[in-house]
Image (cartoon, rainbow, N blue to C red):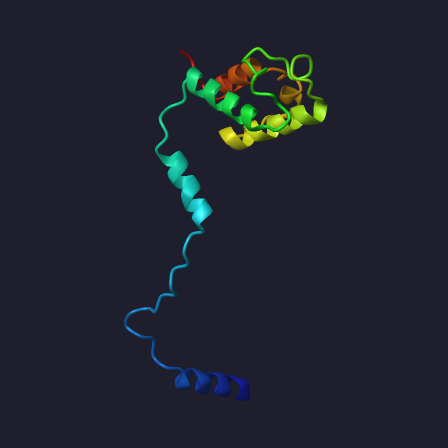
Length: 128
């Protein structure tokens, strides 16, 4: 009974809740997150041409690819001299660019830019 008396006494000493709750200041969203939201929130629908342009752009930025040799039909290993690790890095870059994961079983089959374009178009339901 002593514990009950103490807890009741402690309840009596508590201040009455205020009429309006005090809210914690809102934390700002990091700039990168805001930037990504802005970048993707109002993008036009994907087209085959848009996918092709983005795939080629990402590939041109890859330091081991000579942009002069690059075409949509260039084979990564035969024409561009890349190895299997380079191909994995390319697939990872495409996953980042298009915002979805490509399973390893599918990624192993993507050996030229056109195959990547076709794969992304199929997964994103883009048909022209």
